[in-house]
Length: 381
Ligand SMILES: *Cc1c(COP(=O)(O)O)cnc(C)c1O
Image 1 (cartoon, helix red, strand yellow):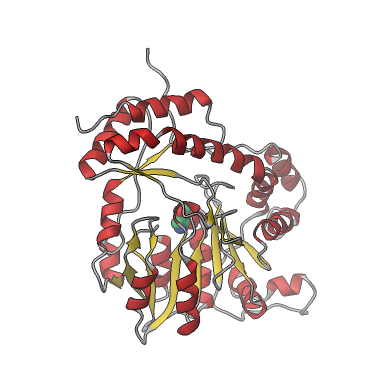
Image 2: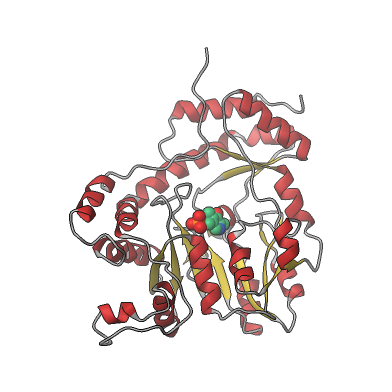
């Protein structure tokens, strides 16, 4: 009996997507900044408590905007984790600034704040962090560092929409937070993102950076009588079609989160004994943070066991990949950055990590099949 393969990730279908798209196409306002942009922006403001939200074409572009707004340039250094998605580093390198790669805390996969403190030089211009799996980075020491050295903090919150750290929404604690609505993320619109910020002056500039460097947004509000080129910027505003899908997804945020959380909790409960017997470590969430059930990972005792489990699940038709080749040892990382201290936890995490399928709408029998697949693995083959 061959059973259909289990996908690793599958985009959620929100019920208002098609009617919303239909409404956009018949409205003669298909470019950005229409009613669905306004509605999705308001929903994100409510969900995160962020005073300002700007939809963008991607999280990568939101990071690019943050780098532009921080006026990063040649001679500047930006501290960021080695274990993360490359978009954080490209945002820095595109401005001509230098990436300084720092190791992670192996408990969470997030940047290690002690190592951030040790990597600061007179050239440091900002610290970029990421909340891996929607589990907050240890923010207390980072806020302290940021205040003591007047360094802006940028939170890559691609995994973290709806997550909190001591009751505060992820993405609203630093100078900027960035969200992703790529279709592998918890809430999606195909491709999309958002920039979160609280400073009013920065918001005026951010609107211009998003609109090709012009004050067109203020012009459309009637605040200026013509618009012109004011800033360095680009075209980071998504169309109403993307906003229409995003708005439909956000309307079902609680439901989507509930589906994901149920699968996450099942993995976490059902794999405890197996993990204790095989030497695998389960994903860890410190008690002062609420995570987003964006992903579920296991850490193998070593690379051989990870590869063997991946292979074992693959033969059972279960897609279970790993991710993030460490940036410090990547070709571009060496060209555009430097690494003051070896990132050995980042390398170990990447080598030992395996992720289980997780998406809203997985059936109980799919989850059972995955659990049976994992627990039938007893070691190297
Ligand atoms: C997905 C992801 C990004 C990039 O998001 P896009 O919206 O695809 O640009 C950036 N950072 C992290 C941590 C991600 O997971």
